[in-house]
Amino acid sequence: MAHEEPTKSTPTTKLLIRNIGLILSGDLAHPILDADAVVAINGKISALGKEKDLDTTAATTTIDANGSTLAPGLIDSHVHPVAGDWTPRQNQTGWIDSCLHGGVTTMISAGEVHTPGRPRDVVGLKAMAITAQRSFAALRPSGVKVHGGAPVIEHGMIEEDFKSLADAGVRLLGEVGLGSVKDGETARQMVAWARKYGIQSTIHTGGPSIPGSSLIDKDIVLAADADVIGHINGGHTALPDDQITALCEQSQRGLEIVHNGNERAALLTLRLAKELKNLDRVILGTDAPAGSGVQPLGIIRLIAMLSSLGDVPAEIAFCFATGNTAKLRKLDCGIIETGRAADFVFLDYAQHSAGKTLLESVRLGDLPGIGMTIIDGVVRSERSRNTPPATKLPKVI
Image (cartoon, rainbow, N blue to C red; front, side, top):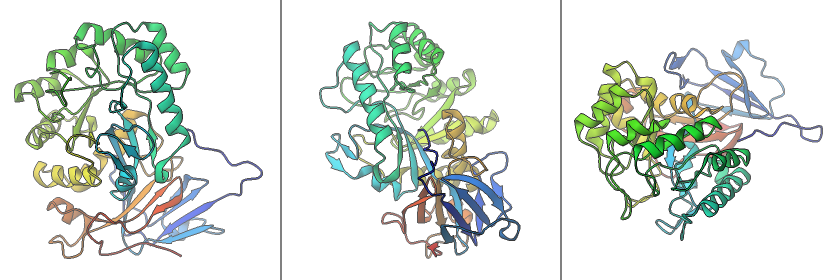
């Protein structure tokens, strides 16, 4: 989403975050930063380092982190939104706001597939995608950035349809395989047309998710060559181990692990990515709302599960839900570095956790407590209503 530049009538905003105990960068190459303060001007990170070395004057908002951990706002790479903060899948309102309280500041639509009466004709599906793109560009539920407008491809689409979608601002395809296009050859052609015009693609992987959907096996996934292998651990039903292995070994596309999938298959994917030295391909989503509901803590639970059972340092697991996704999805958030969006989550180890630091507690499988979220330099939520209470909490001065 475009960031609105300040005009002459828009006053400059300056955010200072000080007294940070630990900064997780979101970048696999350097997951922990040697810094205790961050400055953001007009919603963009302008400086970070030791507070004594930074220009901290004239801050319009100052936050004392109180020794807690600062991380990039979490990114959910796989959601199915419909209309604002309501989902007909569970007839639930406020689900995006609940996810904000789970540390998620950005969401990527994998298709507005739960829209009642979803059109399957080319004119209708394009109109719905453009409407969703426009709607979520104009409305940020609780401040969360929802990248919406992801059409599900259907037979009858031609190259010009993808060009017109791109010209209208559509940048995503919904899960390939959820519409009538289920064969690798047709999918590959349409994915290539989408890529030509700057539209990124995700493919459904595994067994049917709901009645009416179909099995998409590794041969179709490899043939389609979508940018993201969506829910490689199944959504909900995973492919056999040998097919997951083949996808990890024979493709270089993104490996998306979702909360709604098979946890054993998720751990297999992580192990294969480690062995192949491809951890940069691993990204996380929830695949919510779905039959299993909405999981406000789905991303943070995946981080804890993959770290504790998948034997990866917690600071690396956080990268799966931040910098890895930002790089693959071409987003300006997800990494704490100058020039990027000032989207943050404050965390600390939960009260009475066996782990006595944030990283240790996550490595032991405990969920951290979330103390605050910030999007574009603006405080969007304070102490989370959904996580266990954090030991240390930030405070707006």
